[in-house]
Length: 166
Image 1 (spheres, rainbow, N blue to C red):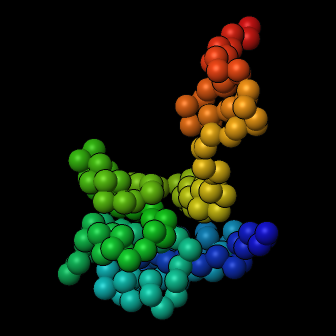
Image 2 (image 1 turned 135 degrees about the vertical axis):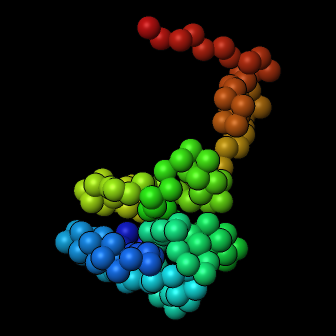
């Protein structure tokens, strides 16, 4: 089994057209031990996606030329990298749009740097989780079978009904 990579081996791409936001977010992530790169617009983000292969992207919505929603749509055409939207667009319709387009999380500005870093850790944890074993049926012998997908146990041809414990 390959051990999980440490924080210092993880690269976070911060995409925002405001350099001070990139600097502030980068500083907080670097203090946590992450490698950070920045991009000032969606086109630059798409280029860095293929060149740097980031482990996670923090993406602003309100950017000139190509907005964050369109950037996210293009990211999802080629990658499953976790994306956290970070934006002033806090209306429910915007959050739903971002999540439906494939964002893993949605944080509105102004934001808590500690909360954002915690959300980054949570998103990266989900990515590192092992794939669950397929739910299958196991036949022990002619008299016993267990169907994990249907949550059913059959003994000598009869389904066993478990009583809930109190």
